[in-house]
Image (cartoon, rainbow, N blue to C red; front, side, top):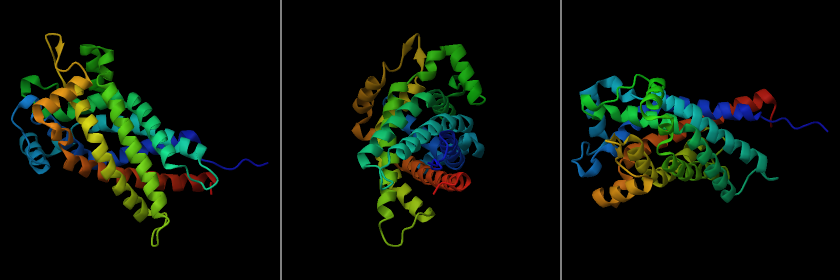
Length: 301
């Protein structure tokens, strides 16, 4: 019996990472704005930025137009590690467990998304830490800025100055966030796409991918912001006289709610959605196009 053609697993991982990196090149300024807003008003201090527009204008005015791409090298490395892993695992699991109809259940999609996200987050935490520090550096006084030249300089200096384990600081909230994000993003996208294809006027094309991605982006933003802001605070904290600013993710969460209010857990919702929405759309559109090319190349129906 002739074996049915399929896309090799390594190709699925490459396509996932490439799709994420391509999308990141476009939306990096929004990611920087999101991080700045999450750091605004920290520890009860006066808010630096009232809106996303104010944050963006402030960065351009004080640091120059190119500053909106601070941390791009870290963002690309994060996609090369985190997104390569999570999309590669998710698409591989989905393809392996799909039933006779060619689909898997929504609960299976959630489980696959959570598994893929958790593993991907662990792999991508060092790049994530470098990204958080590089995008928030410009808000600090000159004397306190870390001044990393690029992501590799950041990783080298973190290991040299703070120890190799610091690369995984905030790993737990990062993994928790990724589990929420991927359960929402990957499962919602796959389910929305499956549903849309049952409706008139929808075919398996860019319009369908765009619509499913926007639904996925909204669900992802709502689910991901609370663990994301905790992760951001933990990864960006300073250690003064050997004492870290937060004892861990739970302590950071408690103090954020206590000092800034429950709604502060969704601080930066607009720039986060404006970043996640387009990034989700672009990532899945790129991924779908890469998969079409791969299917044609490997003779997959």
